[in-house]
Length: 173
Image (cartoon, rainbow, N blue to C red):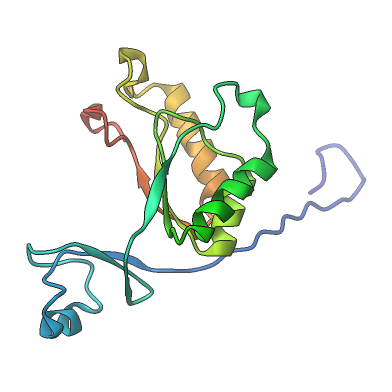
């Protein structure tokens, strides 16, 4: 990268730890060994049962809903968010949902989830607590979503981006 009009040469580098995983929601009779064998590589079929497969292995989802730790965002600490994920893992949880009525969390939360193999179901920041939280399709909303998807998309722990499970949304996102 060289600023225009500058003869100075410099470089910009970025380093990120990434990982790859495949998550499938399987909706089949998981008590039938023949079905399980048949559906091992499918992303869901039939109409009985519900379970997740991560990298081909069926897992039992155990988790919690993550809400803001404090109503004063400036008092958040990266260490506290990291500790939250460690506490969830120590309690044998493997799923955390980031609630859409909260905030996008600090990088330490997602880094800890990546490190510990905790899957994150991530709502976008909308909820039905009041009319002002419903998505409206504004340019500011689109920019916030784009910014956070760019910031967080490399985290293999995030397995779902949910536009707003508590909103009508009108198909905006």
